[in-house]
Image 1 (tube, rainbow, N blue to C red):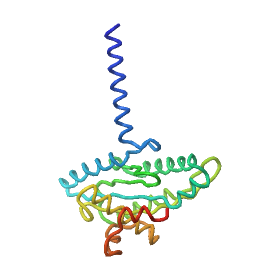
Image 2 (image 1 turned 180 degrees about the vertical axis):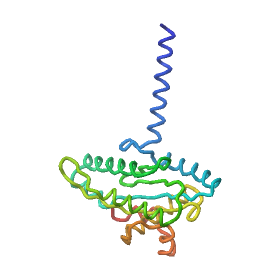
Image 3 (image 1 turned 135 degrees about the vertical axis):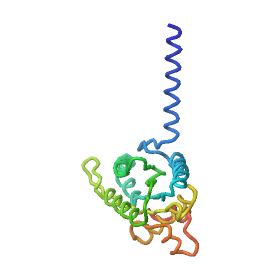
Image 4 (image 1 turned 180 degrees about the horizontal axis):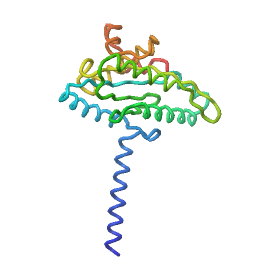
Length: 205
């Protein structure tokens, strides 16, 4: 009996450890990988892409006007909308790709084996259509739109940090110029020094 209790305690300890590891690497609201886990997966994907001569796409998605939903209808309603968007994104990607909630109303996608810009742009437009389907919460319908920025490996960066920064800069251009999905090459061409995360954070949501 004493051994059985010891086994039970060990099993519980391992279960607790698994829960802790999961919570440390996943967003508590949506259950999606968080930025830490996403960055790790991008790092591993780059190593794989180098071996196979693949392209990768890091896609930065920022919901437009989301603050108004929170301010007008409350954070609980806003949370439901974020959960619905997360589920839609998860359902849109292929096995092996990663959807992440970065923070607030920002999501990230890692697209493996991204063939070329037109292929990735077509996928990004599909994402906009999926997000654009009205979200129904407690009988109220919310129309959500998004701005999307894209950075490709190896074209726009060779590290997770460079790709995330490039996708963020491209998203800023998408939001400011209202041009739909934008690539980092467009962001670099549109300004002498590309927008930084600080610029983007100060942009109106």
